[in-house]
Image (cartoon, rainbow, N blue to C red; front, top):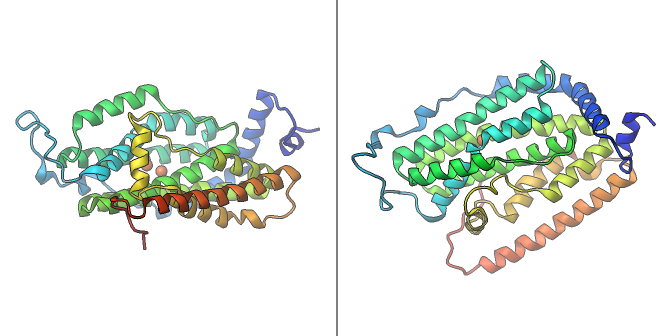
Length: 325
Ligand SMILES: [Fe+2]
Ligand SMILES: [Fe+2]
């Protein structure tokens, strides 16, 4: 049995060296497509400057006028969603380490993408922190302590192979795009909304890169890719677990309709699954067929859970975000 045959056989045990060699082989095979997608990205991605989005005229010195809880214009869940959004973006050093570990091979398109992606992501925390600090919409001490806690803990995502890693980042980028965009809409602040529209456009292009490179992988190793995608969907978690009070805050964000099960299923999972035509692929092995069956069940269960959640909230005194146009 060759190494490739063993990858295609889901029951085969792989040594760590063999698994690494397989991942390198797949990345090499995908490299021309990564180069094409990188060039496409570079053509459509617009340069933008965080300082152009910040209302500096509102700034005052904190030593003369310390932050007090009556200063924010944003309140309640809008504040919480911005806090989670910024602290999540703050954790870029961990994401860079992971992305570099998974895709940072060689000296060609992959490493170029890792560098470009990291540089673009860095702008997100810059613009969000500047906005929140200048407008005094969140206590800057709370933000800095949250950042310290987050970064000291770091973030890890155990992606056992390249295909799983690609599946995770494709869904993760779209989830981030939607949650940022909805946070901006929920804020009812045109300045905040403009920032979130800008960041969401970046996240969308990141998603498109990962979605399309995994689309190419689906053509090379369809069964292994399907299994990886399903495994990632079943295990999916947002990367904010180290943020102080994350579960409680995520629950508030869900109740507000910024990011809930309905959004996750209908606006994150389904569009990408449909784009790949996952349920229409033919010639899959038995394990991939079984994975697809589990995925169908999972989507059905998410639908039921989302409906129950919406029914429970109907009539509750919670301001919920309407669907985007
Ligand atoms: Fe980002
Ligand atoms: Fe992104």
